[in-house]
Image 1 (cartoon, rainbow, N blue to C red):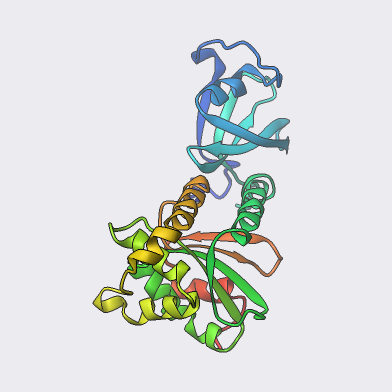
Image 2: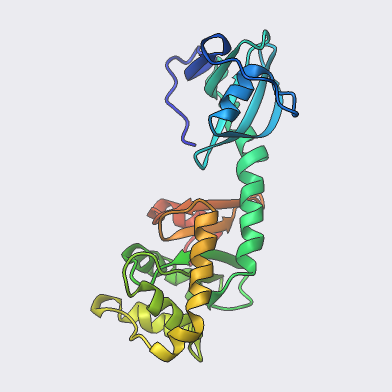
Length: 264
């Protein structure tokens, strides 16, 4: 979740929504024994991933709301919930690290393990020190540009880009993805699609498609289960060893972090 701009450098809480349990219907406490103010949020679709001690005798919670990480704070009287980002008087973000620790980090670690077992196409040296997974639609212009931007690292043998082939953008996206996955040399087929992208990409082989469409459908389902809606969506390891995710085309300034080193 992108942090809101602070209203004041001396503010402790920035852009917070105060939700009073008195103004919401009274809900019986669940088996998890959440206070009513927290249970009201849960009943509205907010999931709780963890809690922690927060300043001001408050209890912090982190979780998900409509697929996005969220943080909220229960006041000491347990009668109010403050939803938003907590800042110190000096402007330090106290929320971001908790979301990473308790929500985003575990989610990305799980995604990484699922991606390892997915049907992907290796692009670059299999012994490259850096592995990057990316959901790729054969018709996606932003996937095409991302691959072009990654070229120096791939050609230098520093990165293997693993394309999890999906078909979501156009009617022929799935057949093209299945053709690539099921070809005798998927890496070469992927390269052909890249080279011919401006003229329509790889030619669909119906025999290959009939045998490999299910693989693409499973990748589509995986992408959806991870809450992703755009290609490319890319998972990589940062300098601290944590798994990070970038949805959409990376900006030039982000490529070094994703590739794990300066451009060769």
